[in-house]
Length: 91
Image (cartoon, rainbow, N blue to C red; front, side, top):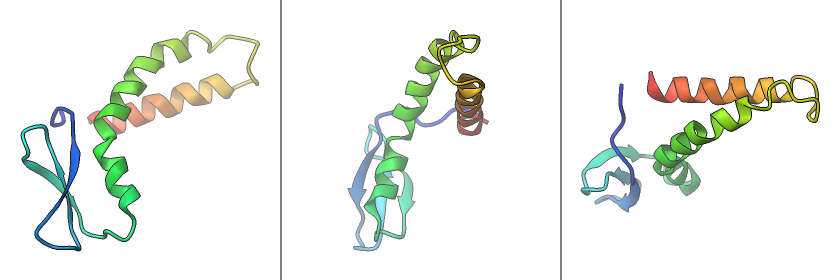
């Protein structure tokens, strides 16, 4: 499964109770119905950038899985969390 390419941006809808998430061409790809917390819309709009950051960071984090510099298991947990987030975003 692939998502609509970035950038995504937040636009107001014809109602004060709905925020739209639009793609780069201005097409609505989602909507936030509860606008009491605009941070939710910002997080959703940032999703493609966050996924790209995780994909970029994963190999660097994996390189430190056997490092003795970090608390035991900390890097392994981080790798698992990153892989889970990537999996959930792409499947």
